[in-house]
Image (cartoon, rainbow, N blue to C red; front, side):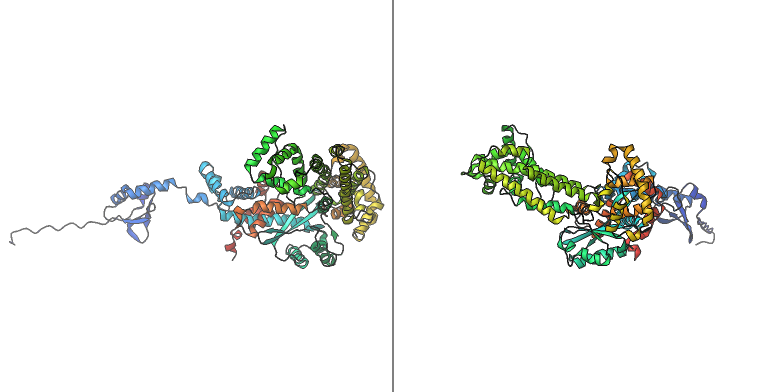
Length: 640
């Protein structure tokens, strides 16, 4: 190169740009990178990029990119995370928690699935998008089950225990056994009385136990009572089915419990006695009424064509078609309605089976006496027996309903059973078997009519004998001494109260001198209440009458006696209803539910009596419940 050539000028070195905070004012998605001043962080894209070359131009170039634009649109469409988390100090936290707990309560009360409740909540968040509270509620399936098992169920038991333990209150224990597949389930229920709420039944536990022996059941009951801090000294009666394992003479649940609580009373189910009375009395009839009902139902239940044929016969005979009812042999109240329904369509039914000829099932022909060698009188005899049963079973049905009524107490047991026996005796003595039965009997041949009357009388004699065998109608029965406590009419004397206290071994627990004065005071109140309420007083149940007395005057010794007496169940109807609820909740669609979950749902359903809106009002005021619902301790894996 020639020395005359001028030197080439050097390139000017480019100065690197640093990140500037003022860029964030126009770009809220932008943030600095702490360890590198020449880079920027995009919160939308979750990545860093260099700004050293173009500075703000690099920022604008990144913002113009397709990926960044797409991320910004997505971010704007999503709700901020803060709306799903509520600060503990937030004024709305209690309202949101109460709403969640009430939704779970609603799910359990109405036997809804947790999946459907979860879906329903998500739908509400979509359709009620303007509700801030709905957006902040979380109700996944796992959380719902945790609220049921570890928040609501413990409260359902805890509320009952508070009443039973402070101060100690007398109560009876009730149990029964039922199968769920190859599992044997035992509920533990209690009954007690308070002047504020009256006679109350609550469930305490629901346990799986394969041991159905007396020793096994006693161990189960004692274990549950210890778990809840309850004493056998508080237990007034044991209520269960009338089986040998429960009430046998030598080694039964009752005898084993009585060794631990000497004053324990039998709270056996008198509705079972009435049901068994029917079963034994029906054996005295030559017409198998129960089998007639079962066979006729079975004939029509499996065929739509037969049902349509019966409808045509009903129309031809000018009889209104009625569905044939199913009789379940273990259901006490299903036989008489099924017989009554047969009688409503009897003419059409008989015509239908006669029209079948040789195709009529042989068993049905024999039961209804439709064989070729049968006479018209034979056919009429079946109808007469059905009419008799329809009439007499109405009496049994009425007694069972009375015994299983929620308002029936042990005070009324003797009068109910005695009235039942007297009605049976009166019908036998008067030879009254029902008016329609009486008319039909007059059309039979004398011999046939005499045989039918003899069997109807044998039915009544058997029923009377069975009732007298299994229920003590003597004045020595402690239930007999309770009759003055019905408060229907007349004064309540001190001698009557003393007799009750003596029968129940309560003398040492009472102040007898004060009790005498309380009787005088109570009689004054009773006279006034009867005059004020008149007919309304007669329609009140026994518990309601005593609640009215205790509301008017303080009579502690009399209250102590009635708390003891009204804690004794009149039947096992309550535990039977527990199994009905169990069947509804533990259906084939929910067969994989754990025993703990079903137990918890039963406790909530049976022990909480509020409607869903009422429960929400209560939950809002219960700070302890709301705190437990928010705590992570309700999740099983958090406890480990």
